[in-house]
Length: 224
Figure 1: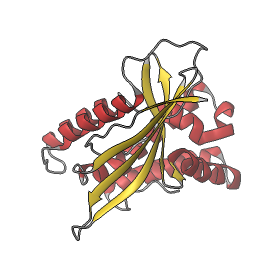
Figure 2 (figure 1 turned 180 degrees about the vertical axis):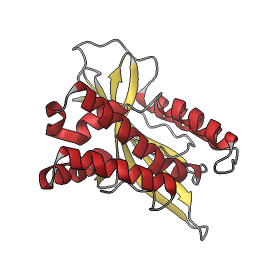
Figure 3 (figure 1 turned 45 degrees about the vertical axis):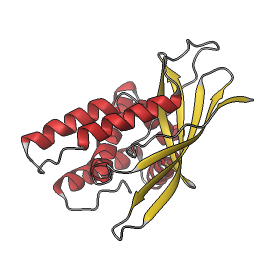
């Protein structure tokens, strides 16, 4: 059974990039903030960083990217996202390969979603429910993201954030958008590439995609 907290509502920017869950000790220390508050505060910090328009390629834009990266590091756990996304193939990789894969996935996610977040700073995020496991190792937060499209019509999407307690702080490891989970999506893409070709081929295509995204040659989506 999981404990539930009453729903709270906040206005927040959308969170574009996800993180995964680790199993902690049976009785972990209580986190200073609730899972919902971590998401809310992180979103507000993202909004604060991106509220100023910057020109692509300018020193101001590079500074903004660095600030955004620091903020996102405070609530997304890229290593756990990488571990879960690689699935059963993670254990077959050396520590050096795991680090390389994690860093590469992180760069791809940042390159893919930074502009999407930048273009939608005025999204609202209405929190509906927070569930924390009895052992306080994991939590789920449900929310609805809303914004106006190009025609001025309000559109909404259900989001579910998956978090785990790491060093007394709740960290996101996955985000579900309706029926789509970031972890499941990446795992499917990566597993197909490895089975069809090899792990080396996966790394090669990820590096190629990153180069193409950075050069503007392809749409900024992570699909192999």
